[in-house]
Image (cartoon, rainbow, N blue to C red):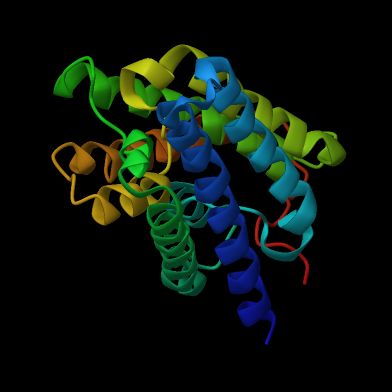
Length: 226
């Protein structure tokens, strides 16, 4: 039963992330004038809000790359990785389907593309995902960190990344977030970048924080406490 509740939290969190973030991009394209700063704010704020809402239930991954990195660094049960991935991808797909119904072709704005070329976009997504996971590891697994600030710290990085890298790669850092709109709009040309680079970056980020922890206290779990 606990796993079902965790999966429900992951589904809702990822749904909210894609629905609000990609919805903001679609609204901007439709002429409502949010602009790059407005879209970045929406992505950062929805991540922050949902971490505070369900972080205590599921750990608030909302991202298959984060789940894999937690499992690889022994902060998350490996047997729950695939169920978490399923819940996250389903949330992203259903949110994208709803946006497609509400906004039609404007959902195209939510599809992530390699605007600076394949190699540079791949590298940038690796770097962005590295720092995302580095921050998540700090606030979610180190008992010395101020846990109440986790949502602000993580949402702040998502906002910052979207501000400067959004026009370049979409600043996805999240395979599920890119998968939903790409499949619904049948635009998968660059999808492989977003299904690979975030995993690599997140694994490096988790490893890097573990390397510099300088603390013998047992690390906290990253799967919630429900």
